[in-house]
Amino acid sequence: MRGLLMAALIAAPGVALAQDGHEMCFMSAVTVMLPAPDDALTTEDCIAACQANTDCVAWTYRPHGFAAGEMPGTCRLMPDVFETTVSDSAFCGRIA
Image 1 (cartoon, helix red, strand yellow):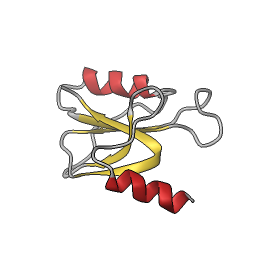
Image 2 (cartoon, one colour; image 1 turned 45 degrees about the vertical axis):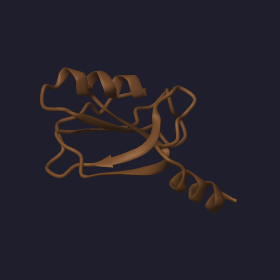
Image 3 (cartoon, rainbow, N blue to C red; image 1 turned 60 degrees about the vertical axis):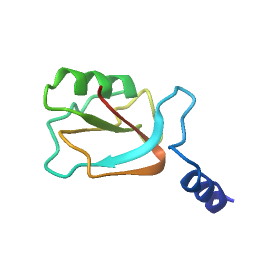
Image 4 (cartoon, one colour; image 1 turned 30 degrees about the vertical axis):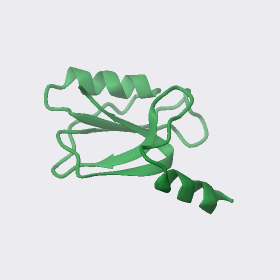
């Protein structure tokens, strides 16, 4: 069943959206990652960190595995984007 869901997401145009409106995806950078906060509890914390860094054009946030919202997740800030892939556990976006 999970395979069918992933196939549908990949075949569908665009990237799946989570309930909060953020894309369920993972981005990788062409170059090095930018310094990112290690205390981001929410997607919004990661977005704010990207907006505060003039070199940041994109972000990826993966919530904590079993204590999302209570323990920090993984925030990645990028100066460029190499690839965007569908994810069932991470959110990503670009800063306009």
